[in-house]
Image 1 (cartoon, rainbow, N blue to C red):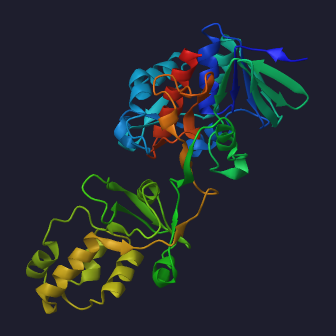
Image 2 (tube, rainbow, N blue to C red):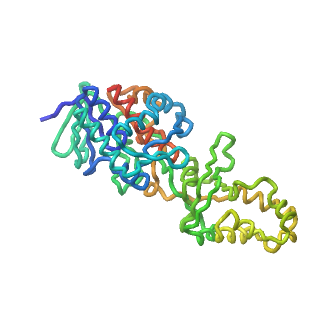
Length: 396
């Protein structure tokens, strides 16, 4: 027996849950499927268990895509304020951290419970724990096999995400399915991921666990490339922390990442310090802004010791320039296992920006992380999940 629905949504993460709820509350008969035993597993671990559910500074300029204008439509029609209103309607207490990031006061479980209640209000049938056995399309209907069941519907939504965090069950299923129906895929790669450093930077591995605020950039990317002022963290394998995770989404093999270690110091500060405090050492000065161990490591690398008064202006100028753009050439990243999201994905040039429907495959939709739209760290990817899900849910 084949069960009949108006829409089948594959993937019960943020995008899938919200899309199913939106369509269901419009009177559509919706089946929501996920191979995991429970819904919203990535939601539950996000934000340290408190779910950074959106960002009040959301705008299309905070997203990467080979089709850079694609996200504008959905993001403008369902905003961070819209989702916040839904959160508040459920009495979920929240707070703003730095840079517009909104978190639950208590637990990410509240967001999952809210989304499940929204699905229940729309009569959505939620089925978890069975892998998808196959998907076919004929006579205007998509037929999906899962476990011992089969279902069909004129609309099918791909909301299975990307391969980041495979231990959570993530895979490239979305891309295989997209290709099956003739959609192109932009090469997926890890994003928001720690970067690894080669052997010549072993000195910095001794600083594992040390963190400091920096401005991180990718050298030579031009004026349009973003710079991120947040914490950087040294690890036993390389670099992490919010500033590095942000820049990793733009990093490509061979690129040089630069960090500005004393971002609040005005140009010429070392030469001025020489005049004002000739008996001070460079290490003493750096310790006023940076952790002791990092200050010592930087001084060792710069090869400057002794009182500032005994150092030439040229040497101090060179040291200041390097501290302002300290170069690292990563040899890779920690991969999908440690990546918070996936860059690349289903090519949005084959998808309607208004409805998320494939332009040449009627009834097939793709939303959330599955498509080639990747947000910055800090709630932007959740907001894309909500916005793209809403667009598809209103179109089905």
